[in-house]
Image 1 (cartoon, helix red, strand yellow):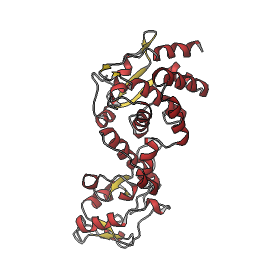
Image 2 (cartoon, rainbow, N blue to C red; image 1 turned 90 degrees about the vertical axis):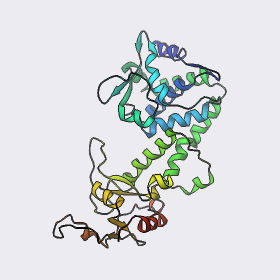
Image 3 (cartoon, rainbow, N blue to C red; image 1 turned 45 degrees about the vertical axis):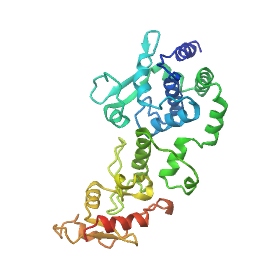
Image 4 (tube, rainbow, N blue to C red; image 1 turned 135 degrees about the horizontal axis):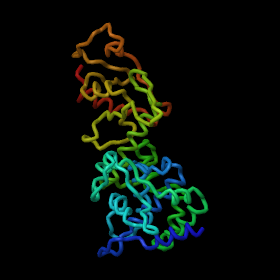
Length: 318
């Protein structure tokens, strides 16, 4: 407990930038988010990646707790928390893909995810947070120190599971109830969360199987070999619902984007007559014509008939 109290004292003295709205609340929000990720088993053994979970829960906690006009910029505390120390040592460290340190904040969350492989907490702090009792102590202390007026509301929303991250997951999964909710997606970070959920859910819903070829491929290293393909390009509609997606292997993804294959109203594969290929090759596209694509078991996740029609009319080269 003495060690935990040492960390709590450091958490109460976080270096926070001064603004006209008061001291920045970003670092306490990030700490609450890291605790929540550990609690939900989303931290990958002290590897906190810049992904939909980390950014999405940060944004959810921000919306639940911050009432001032501060901007909800996740990238700032992710970098600057490295400057806070316990007994002279940082308790948050960033690890880049190149091994070189990040010299300054990276303000784009998409760029940040490409540069930083993961962040880690100090080993002893991470070990302390494996205890549910310690997590409860840290969470309660942070809330009382920085957001005492919002603590009860925060707990209520967490119990109900109706915060921003829950809502945006439901939106991507084409949940019918989302049409009755106003889910505001304005910032690059909001779009990053939605886009990365789309890329995660499409392969999952198709069980890592190409909808056209039936090829199924998984990796023990968590690499994706099946692509999440937009039917109508995101640039056209900004639609990241799974009903605007297909799981395709890379070569079929490229063929689909270039209009060499499409899907008819009965979910059967259409192959362009403009293809030149070896017809006796085992992987030729022509043999797919007329085959029914593989679909998720839940009709809620099926590709939209309207989106498929758009692809046939605007992209497919019959």
